[in-house]
Image 1: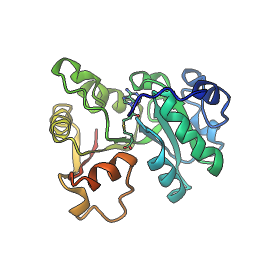
Image 2: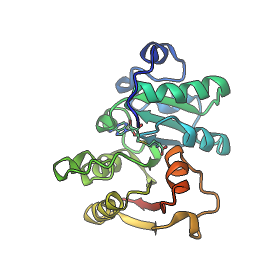
Image 3: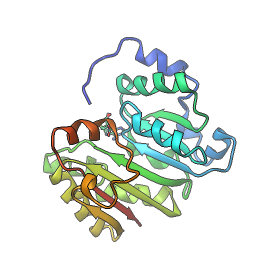
Image 4: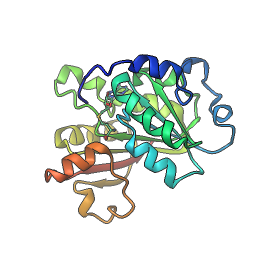
Length: 211
Ligand code: SAH
């Protein structure tokens, strides 16, 4: 995501009713935050929020939490949500590494990772959101029937991710190297990056996995 300093984005975020600020004190209380017992699904590295807003509109019976580390990007999602005021969408501005401080064991029903940063250098492998280190964190917050879906057009990152899933002993439910021309294309909700990269002709890879 382009790192442009959007003027006033920190202030916008600080005041916004859809952003959960004291996230580390909210562990175990997400049902109360939404005021219902619906499952909580999260997208880590949400970007400008198109995917999560589309999902939330399609699935009002699910609560969505979008996680994004950069204010300048998050502020775009906030703009969309301030207009629409979907009751089942909240945001957190945070670095995903601390995810276990924010959600209790079993509190998260499902995790989406879309077009995550590749961190191409070997020594940065553990920063990739599909590394075994991150999978272990996800395993500690996912519900018993929970799982993770990861989409990317980056074949190197995808191959790495499949290896990490195997090394972690997770089960692969679906693996496709060309989602848009596969049996799973129907009902696929596109992300901002997905639209951009697939329109350039890049095949989209997807894996669905669970611990
Ligand atoms: N999911 C969106 C954006 C993809 S770009 C889409 O598919 O269109 C990846 C996004 O993840 C960027 O906005 C980046 O800031 C965010 N991100 C990357 N690593 C992160 C981390 N460790 N914690 C939180 N957000 C992260």
